[in-house]
Image (cartoon, rainbow, N blue to C red; front, side, top):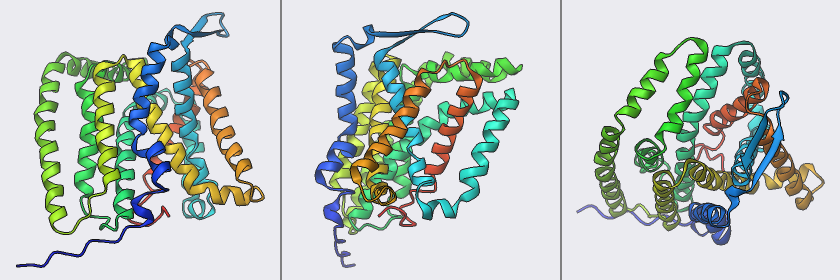
Length: 350
């Protein structure tokens, strides 16, 4: 009979930054987001509206929680530059991706209506995919901290996170707002994508049955797979299990039972909360060193720059093409950059 492999050693107690930091900013973030969403509703936040006039004199209104949620979301999208551009090692490895590509993409979107529409639709669905990968990435970091092989369970984790994040979006009550993005193709004389989205929505009951039919066995297979890995010596990280469970609960509760505005606030809040905390924890030393060794100054610069952009971007009229194009560039670069600047297998995260 084969001997059981020795248990791997824990790194940093099995946490990314530490017990309290991890639980406040990573592990329990989805549950915190549910409380934030509940507070916004019960305290009457959606009854408070911000108003302004467009250049044409049209009255623009937005609920306060919606505005703050959008601002925080846009702020976290810009936070990636403190990792991609402000980190000399990362920047030197991908110079053209961090300079030429975003500039070229902005010019193309301003000049081409087709490029603008394609990017606007891509932002909606890439965001859904990207958000699931963030939880996946945090889970891989917990595996690293527990001394596990970075390849062990990687595929299962990826599929599981797609299931618990994308599944509720596709099968839940908020598929229609996500599919609404395809209507933008009608602006460039291409009604087929919008028609396809409408056909998918018309068969939403069948889509729900398909997702549920795949989802429940998928969860069972995932648990079985990790039970086998555990018997072979894999150390199951408790923070990872808690994070995945909290994310699944939050995703089902938000997309399945809340209004779209509330679901948007909840899901984007915990995603942005986790991301801002991760960037700050990884880059705080480098940023402070550039600012004379002052951590308070570094934190002020980090939050000031990102929140200023977020508040501006959330307030600017959504119909201004250049503003939306710039926001699309920031979003797309955030999604793309995250795919190659946080690799656990390449040991890019300390």
